[in-house]
Image 1 (cartoon, helix red, strand yellow):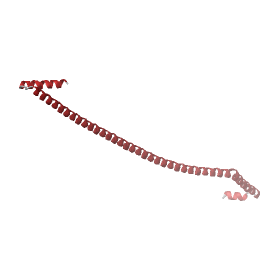
Image 2: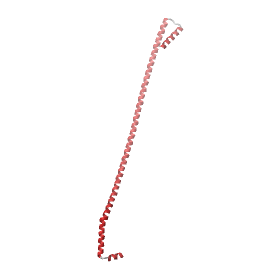
Image 3: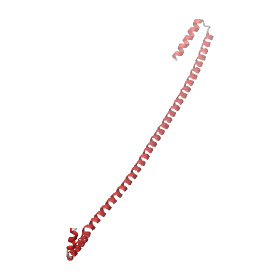
Image 4: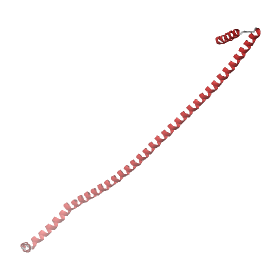
Length: 167
């Protein structure tokens, strides 16, 4: 209460001066301090908002890049699997061709060997027939020339066989 009575006791001129000085001080503070302070606070709020928006954009971009990387990785794995499977199929096909060629070659060699063996057999039989025929003719001609005893026949056969062995 003391302050109220003191205020009323002030002369009107002083009171008017104090009110004008107070209003003038408020006006100066508004221009000098409050305006720049609100400007700084607004700028700071804008910067924080911009940083938050930038962080959100960066997060979305990072998620997008991570998603793309995952897709590319999956595609690369799929391509690698395809290449491996193609290589296996190609190797199996090549292996089958080599085995088939080897089997064909073996069959051809076997057939040729059988043909050669048959020809040799036929040649041997033909040669034996010719030898037997020649032997028969030789024996018959010798028999015609003379009548042979058993010892003479044996000697003639042995001589002919030794003659064949030397040929």
